[in-house]
Image (spheres, helix red, strand yellow):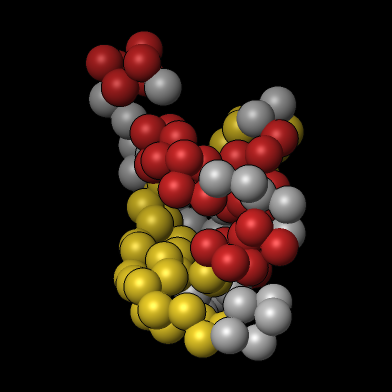
Length: 98
């Protein structure tokens, strides 16, 4: 587990290493989104799975499908782009299952 400092709503959160790394990458994009291709290039093998786990912990992450250029310079359509919006408090029941 590693502590990640959050820019709003909650000062920090303890997350498993891969989730912490993914969240830091997405937050580093600021108001710009980060594509799933960029996450894969950064070593995250299954971005949708990691994003789903972050949301279960309370992350508010917007997903938008857009075109992106892959590492070979090809335009790819329908690529997920993620933007960090904040953190929501979990209910007691959600905490028990997160």
